[in-house]
Amino acid sequence: MIQAQAAARYVRTSAQKAKLVLDLIRGRGVNEALATLRFSRKAIARDIEKVLRSAIANAQQREGFGGDVDRLFVSACHAGQGPSMKRVRPAPMGRAFRVVKRTAHLTVGVTERAEPVAAASVEKPAKGEPAAKSAKPPASRARKAATR
Image (tube, rainbow, N blue to C red; front, side):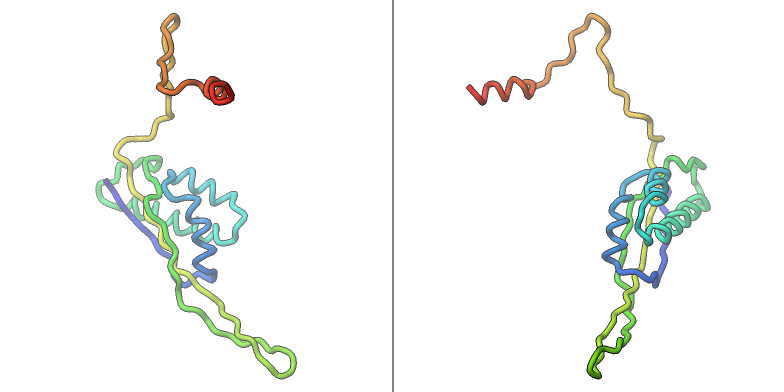
């Protein structure tokens, strides 16, 4: 099982904003994650996309990689707080306000799945066979029983 990661340091955004986008892609396949980042409206999504592409390239360079990028998924991704730049903004009456320009360190890890992901197929019963009975009654029966 191949694992690879990539990191971007000192990215000019707060870690909190980056975590919102990273939560969207955690656990997804790399193709689905790239599509999610492509259509995300957050500006940090472009930086995260670059880091994800770098992690995919790192996995492809690993010895023993199967060659199938579709088997890779985002196993870990996190954003840590980097150093903050403190600046001063002039304010009325001779005062000054402090402006904190935050940075973040982004890390994305990808892992190769043991087997390729197949579309989830639901087995339908053959014609003439009864469908499998569930333990719970249908919701309509449960509602009717509750109202009596």
